[in-house]
Each structure stands twice: as C-alpha cells, then as structure tokens.
Image (cartoon, rainbow over all chains, first blue to last red; front, side, top):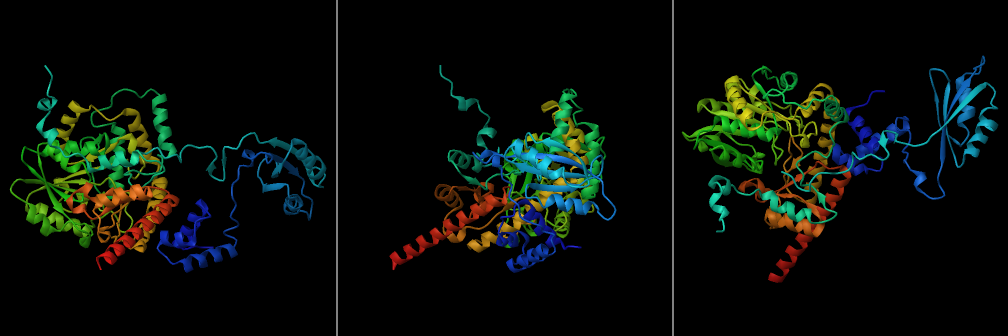
Length: 167
Length: 401
C-alpha cells in the first residue's frame, strides 16, 4: 500500500499523540478537517492504524500493581498445524498481552501480566505448558520498564531547561 | 576617596543600548506557569548520538587545545556539509573557522573587515546583537526598516538609498530571526547586483538554513559572482538543536580567514575540543534527526499561522526559522503593552517586536520551538486575550457615544 505525503504526515502525528484533535492535525498540515477525518477512516479500515493504546504505569497505583513476565516458548509444529494455530491457542487467553513469532532458539515470545508470581506460574503450568505442541517454556520476570513503545518511562529529555526568554 | 565607576567605563560599551529582551526576561522569569513563546532555541534536546560522541571525547581525554581554526577533521566535515547542502566550495585547510557560536563568527567578521566609521547595513527587524556587534568593532550600523507588506524583505531600492561611500558591507539573515522571512535565489541575485555595483561585502548569517520550509534554501555565497564578497556564517545551534554547545562556523575567502584566525588566536584560542568532536558526529550522522525536527517545526509553523489568523491577527507566512511575527496593531496596543499584558493576564510570554528594531513595533515574535500541546494552549490564551481587548475597545466606544 502506497501512501501520499499527507497521509504519512497524519500517521506520524497520530503516532506521537493519538489524542490530538483532527482540527489540530488539519491546521498542522494545512488541509481540511474533513480530509483528515477521511484519511484516518480509510487507514483504520485498512488496519494501517490498528488501535490507539494508552501507556499506563499501573505500578504507580495502589492495589493495581502488576507483574509482567516474558516467556520463551518452543513449539513443534505438526503437519497441518502451523505456528499460526498454536499461536491462536495462546493469544486467545486474555492474560496474554503480546505474542510474537521469533527467529532463533525459541519460537514464540509471550508477554503475560498478572497480579502475583503465583498467578503467572499457574498460567504457565496449567495453560501454556499443557498446549499440545508446546515443547518447553522459559519464563523471565520483568523487573523494571525503562522504555516502552519508544517512550522512555522516566527520562529527562523532555524536561524544559531553557530560560523563559532568549534572543 | 570613592570611585565614580562611570568614569572608568568605555564610552562605546556604555553607549550600547541594552537588549530590549532583557527587561522582559526579568518579568517573565519571576512568574510561574508561564507558557513561553519567547525562546529563541529549539525545544529538542541534542540528538543522543551527538551527546554521546562528546561524552566519549571527554572519556578519551580530548581535553587539550585544537588548532585555532578548529579540528581539521571537523573543518573537513563542514566543508563537505557546505558543498552537499548549499553548493558552496570552501577549502577546509584555510577557508573555515570553527567558532564559539555563530555569534562569535559575526564578531570575528566585523572585527576583521571594519575600519572606524565603516557602515554596515542591517535589515530590521533583526537579531538583537547585530547593531551592537558592528558598533563594538568600530563600525556604524545603518538600519533599514522592512515591513510585512513585503514579507519583511529588503528591496534593492532600499539598499541603494542607504548606501553611502562609507558603506562596507550588508548583513543578511535568511531565514530571519525574528520574522522567519526567507530570501530566495531571485531576491538574493537582485541584492548581489547592488553589492557588485557598489563594491560591497556581505556577511550572511545562515544559522537557520536547515529550517527552511517552502523553498529550497539558497546560500548567498552560491550566487554567481558573490563568493569573493561573502563571509558565510552558520552553526550547529538551531538545525542540530545544539544551542548550549556554543558552536558555530565561518567560511570565507582565505584572505579574510587569515586575518580572522589571527584575531581568534589572540581572543579565544579555539572552540572547546570535546564539543568539536560532538559536532563531528552531528555532521556525519544526524541527517535523519535534523529532518525529523524540521518536519515538526514545519507542522507547528502551519498551525501557528492559521491559529493567529483565526484569532484575527494579521500574520505573514514565515518561510523558515521557528518564529512567527504577527501584527498586533489592530488591538491598539504597542508591542510592549501587548506583551506585558499578555504575560500578566494570560501567562504567555512573547517578545515585543520593537526589541528587534523600530520597524518591529506593532508586532510580536512568537517562537514555535515548543510542543504542539503547549502551542495549542498558548493560542487559546492569546485568542482569549485578543477577544478581551476587543470587548474593552467596544466598551470604550460605547462610552464615547
């Protein structure tokens, strides 16, 4: 799919901040609000714009703390049962945040989120490991999130250190 | 016996007009929660690879002097950069100097070319330092006023009218701080004819060259016949978001450079070594990031111009830099009144246009080196402020009736 410059510009504005108004986008690009809406609709329909997630640091909220684990899963794909089918079995679980097919020493990378270690352990042993074709799992618990989706969580670069007025 | 300090100060230094920005700064700095559109520097932090290169340079112990003109390696990169981006050709060995900011380049240029009484034409509204730098170098600044009707561009006719037998040089700044106005190739060519006819020099401040949005930037040095008459000044501050590094550069015919290097070795020695090594990385590996910042400024420029027009303020479309220069004449306030009241009533800081010369009266400079979220809030506040002025004006009229 080939996009026009304007469409690409709309995407890069939305990628930085999805709560920007269509009016603001139109003004930034010197086009009409109607046109921006049309482009966004089209790109949503084509699944170029997949969703508008909000990055929330739940660990800052009392009672909402979560534990995240990344699990390397090895799979033996059987004839007729490709990775896609195994993957579907895994991503159907609501606990699963993300799932990627990887090259290298394991096949699927699963990110899951739970309230406690036990909850995650239970998911791995009761659900993940019991799936046919899953050969092994290696769980890694996330200790700290430094950067997520290009956002530095506790960075200082966006701090404005400039003087109020300079020539 | 008490000393009268005034008797000991230089008359020239005392005679310099204080920057009009200064007093405004004190006022704005004393307030909290101010959204500032008064900042003449990028809101971006220097790209990480450039910062890292300077850190590495320090770690590796690059703490001694470099050649007066700067690291040869950096001058070579500058030479390539000038050729690649602006089609100008300068020999790194004897035609380029790395300076402490473009400001120092300007200082060097004027000290090198001016004799007492030599006149330099300055196109106003202009950067606050220009007249002072000319004066300090013994020259006489001759101001030429430009107006919004002509997009704040100087015309050959205006230049002709200002030229005397004392005129030595014209100082150009395109894209311009504070108006954002850009001189295109055709306009520069017209100026070149005047320069040639009157046997003048041009000092061209091209610090905002990377931030041109509508037309391709043309360096004055690239105009046919002008190479020998041009002292080209550029730097890292704006395009590469490196203001605090204080690194600029200057390129000129070698006869000029020789004299400037001489002055430089006596006054400064060289620009900071580890920062020069950071700048090397800037020229080698940051084209993409510079372009990304430019895209941001371009979008904000569009946003600002349209917002101001929606508010009802006349605003020419600036082709470059990161400033818009709208007229506030219809509010009936002076630039300073407008800026002071906007600051007090809506906590938005802008710079009154008259800080950049008399012809800036009736205008304000709004910098869009701020996030779009900040700009949106600032524009809402300015809109509210202008509206409140209209209501008061109507009330006054009512009362008169």
